[in-house]
Image 1: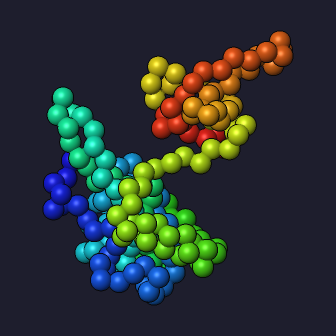
Image 2: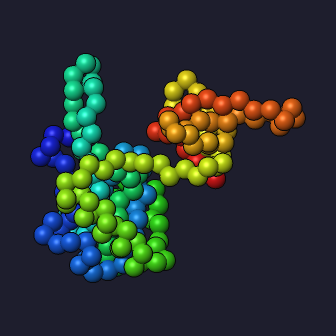
Length: 182
């Protein structure tokens, strides 16, 4: 875990708003838990980026610890030309680059996140799951179980079907432990 002073800035270069950056916006899909390391590399290479992060408190060995964590784990947005894209890949910390077809829409969505962060709003990751979407539990005692998501007033449930019987059962789930099955 990084000390507060060792965290990269959320926006770099810090003096600009992301809507003023010149170049093409792309998304770096980073290797697991490499978002901040990629951000540090981009600073060294003078490549503009946006890494939305927020503070999260959790307990480690009974002590309360605060950490600055990415709002979109595994992703970092960067702006530049083709040479910058190649430099991002050369960091060896990026699994792939996602090209954006609608630059205006991406910028518009990123500016909203930027404004919320600058206003001091507390943002946290939120999985966007659709009713009826196939999912897999990725952690906890239900790990690797697959089913269909059902949203309820109190949260979400995973429906487990026995199609041959025309029957199903469901269990309450934590959306933090769910991944969408493509």
